[in-house]
Image 1 (tube, rainbow over the protein chains, first blue to last red):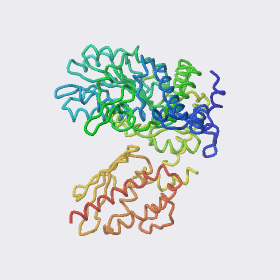
Image 2: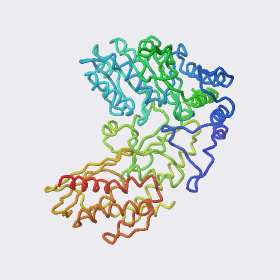
Image 3: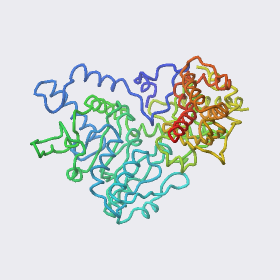
Image 4: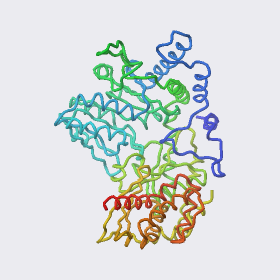
Length: 408
Length: 143
């Protein structure tokens, strides 16, 4: 993998921030976009823009082809059995809410259980709280091990015959933990439960095969994988999606409308009410092309090498705490410096041109489990280098020095 | 953007040696406020008698800016009428947006003017003042 050539394709990286070359270490929040994606979106608006599935005219056909072509790319990227199993959404949050509001509210009742973990992002936690409240089901958590991972023994104990729904993240956005989804799917299915997977942090970074995982639903966002914001998708097994009711009603999703009754289009369109984010889908298709050209296995390897390097280098700093397991982690490092609040860390790093995230990362229950109010996080993608990690390290040393002096 | 503009010595002093950190036994008002975007939180307790803030104390978690600002705020409003305190809260909003104001009540507060150059940190500085404002509004409604 030629990092220099890859970096060349990301225009935003080639600028100075506060007098220093930008080091972007916040890709877990959102990734930067390569030229090919930016161009695909522009080209769509300059040449092909029209509404989809309705125009008889040529542009209408081109827009529809572009939009549906992107769906084919997503289906192939996830190894879904059919494009009918891919529903475009605004992102992971909308996709998980669709599963919760449509499937789970029907499937769950008094005395049933919904199982999640304490490492979930708010978007894979609050929808289930709401389903539990609305249906009388009980929300249960698979406990975390000391290093933040979950054990299959605990999953076995938590998931029971009363469990109707399991929803779990593939990769933690704070701990970098990779969860054993395939094994947990098998446990869930043995008890007759369905499993949804939050793929926001896995899809950009590793090969995903929904049929091999045997998950029932899989959600992801485009903007974390080089695509524009506002586009993502929900994969669902066809039989489940067929039986589910739409949660948004209006144009695009209907078959026949009468004064008092209406019927829906077939899959996947019955879940896509309103004019969709067509240019976003086109951008997502271009992003998938870009990632496949680099190679998903190459991407995984590069990020894990970087994360291991970062873990080793950051561990040499006195007074640093790094959260999550040392091994088998994805390309991010979450940490705190003694005596310096993560917001202060992030502000100092920003003055050195280094962009990291500071805060609770939309994981307040996980922060409480870690017994911190906030953390700093450096996250990597294909365009990051060991030099970026070195710049982070230097900036962290400067942060310590500055606060050591300032606090006295 | 200079770090020294933001982290002035007086700010770091309030951060390291916060004034009025703790709880009151005889509070008349407790206000809990979070900054949901970053996780900072403050619990502010006031003892208000006959329209005067007799005592103010706080506990909470947050960065040097939010905690030093809380320390300064509690020091500045003690002994002031609720309307004077509200006026100071307005003045503080102007200060962190880059406005030219003076705090004769407590000059330390002016050190936080550097926040205006760090837009992402303005909310840190205003958290405790927003708690104060909320508390006083609540106090006025009760009357």
